[in-house]
Image (tube, rainbow, N blue to C red):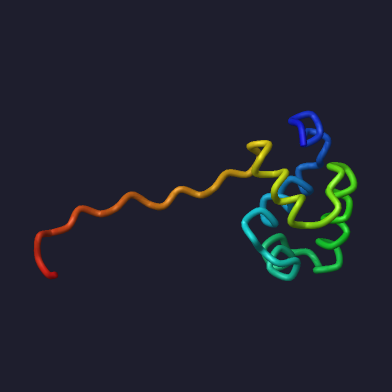
Length: 85
């Protein structure tokens, strides 16, 4: 997907895409966004159509390849106190 194609997504579609990229299920996305799972399914189908994806895995890959979704960075390691194993 190109940045222009991603710009064609509504803000809500962008939210759904980011949630899908996190690996959330439709039920989990629905709970997070306070909508029904069927509404999420409709959003996912519309996003797939707009971006030319044929399945969810391809959609998520497009989100990461385009830079729209980013791999979360692990939190910085805490310095050890010098005690313990």
